[in-house]
Image 1 (cartoon, rainbow, N blue to C red):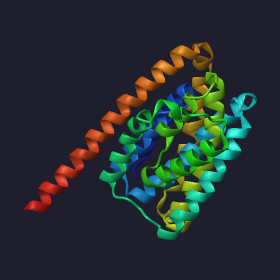
Image 2 (image 1 turned 90 degrees about the vertical axis):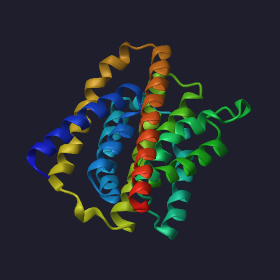
Image 3 (image 1 turned 30 degrees about the vertical axis):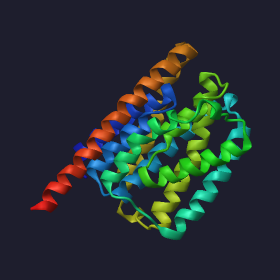
Amino acid sequence: MTPLMIAALGALMVATAFLSGLFGMAGGMILIGVLLMLMPLPTAMVLHAITQMASNGWRAFLWRAHIRWRPVFVYLIGCALALGVWSLTRYVPDKPIALLLLGATPFMARLMPKNLKPNPDSIWQGSFYGFICMGLMLMTGVSGPLMDTFFLGGNFGRREVVATKATCQVASHLTKLIYFGGIVDQAATLDPVLAAVAVAASMLGTTLARRILEAMSDAQFRTWANRLITTVAGYYILYGSWLLLVRGSVASF
């Protein structure tokens, strides 16, 4: 990549890390969509994993006093099971399918019956969500929308949501890096300069968001987080559908 392109991506990573630092979500969803437009899917997944590990790891450190560890350990069980299943097939989806799944997951989560309200403290729910979220992570690059719905459904304050989800996301993105960078074997295609810029930009954006998150109320946090997720998810459904239509039009000639 050219220095100008690396600088532009660095600025985007600061902005998306700021969003994630503020709401604990949405930033990674925006970033993977842009990376999928610019790079082959496995390379985009590797860069996104490095970026999000830095962003979420720094966020978890900043809010470490608010981490709820029981949901984290239960979530890890599901992640390990999903990695084992996906490693048997080494499945890599194409971009339109990944984008459609990316956009559909928040709406799928909201369609769950009300009597199955997410409970982050439940062992079976945590393992189930860990497995499903990790599967989505390996197909779309993110599992944030579904994980957001899971943690927003519990009796967590905004700081606990951000801190606990960030800790789970570090594990998720590390698993994704192992899958695409080791099992699928695409790590060598990533520019090390771009990777270093990604880490620095993610930590900067996360740090900038901390003071604003402190000033928000829990009600404001939940309202704006849900609005942001809906907007971004709707865009990816439209974009993925457009790519499928273009492919179909080209194939018909």
